[in-house]
Image (cartoon, rainbow, N blue to C red; front, side, top):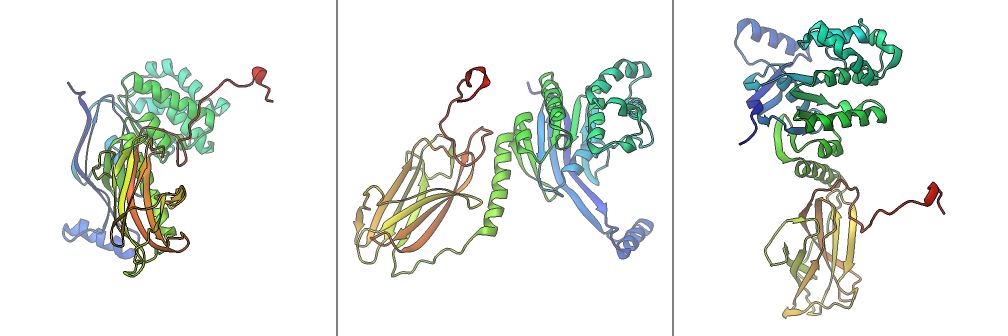
Amino acid sequence: MSAPSLVRLARVTKDYPKIATGGDRMRTLASLLLRRGRMPHFRALEDVSLTVQRGDSVGIIGENGAGKSTLLKVIAGVVRPSAGSREVQGRVGALLELGSGFHPEYTGRQNIHLSSALMGLTRRETMSRIGSIIEFADIGEHIDEPIKHYSSGMVVRLGFAVATAMRPDLLITDEVLAVGDESFQKKCIAWLEDFRASGGTLLLCSHSTYHIQTLCRSAVWMQNGRMRMEGDSFAVTQEYLAYHERKRGEKAAQPVPVASGTLPRILDARIENEVGGEQARFEQGGTLVVRGRAFEPDDRPPVVLFGVVRADGASVYGTHSNEHGYELPRLEPRIFGFGIRLDDLRLLPGHYLLRLHTLDTEGIRLFDTVEMEFAVTGRTRDYGLVELAHRWIAGPPGGAGP
């Protein structure tokens, strides 16, 4: 039996009126007063449907302006959708914009009382928890100063500390872990892990894919106000990173040589699995096979150059077919076959390009380029391009190195 739904959004759309220019303001005012005509607007969310079960942990990722914060505000009840429906069961704790819900003229202590009252706590309940809130915030004597004098990190400390005392059914955080020092971030992560373990439901918006992978079981990728992808947090964040790698690669892309009918070239090629089926996604540690045919007008075995690059253009590996004396077998006049097998694929999860080039028999002149995309999947938080075989060992005795 599945857990009950805590959040249910059905085809939610959110429009904001445009008032950037005088003309926009006049058209918006006329539309409101006359109740006709199309109001100039910006669409922050469009047709978003999302269900969050009790006990889920969901990460929200996307570029700036993708609609992440608006989505969280709709769920938190801070803004009303222009279309669609929103249902939320249980108490919601939201850490959205920095200092939202705090009165700048009140002290930190007074704001604790204010926030607690807004969340429905009695004065007795607040007094029983205020000590743990102040201890968690750890801002010292500043607790009795107006928060308009606080740094951004101190505001986040206080806001998160109040949320920890409330123990809401659903906690919504928007880039909270991006502000504050390292020790406070560790304290927040430890609390979030305990919150999840005890059955709490978490919605975490962050640009840090590491935090999304660590704290969230699933993720939503927002783009231009729409949900581009939803699923396992590792799968979604890896696709998101690959998208940015491709964007960087497109900027740095160089034109590839165009093959001529009278020059050596790749006739066809494909990426397969180990049993010969065409495939484009491989598990880390699996087997990838490349097979193809090359044309050589002089009927001499050409040299094939094989390489792997990440989607952003970063080189991973390359080698020639004649590096170890391999000669392409002749299939028919002027046509030669080749194959490459990569066992125990140690590429880190991400999107890659497999490049094939034909060279003359001497392996000097390059004539052709063919590119094929493939992806590697897996659950790892390692960095870089490939996984290097390694093991952790004991450090030097007494902490002294050689």
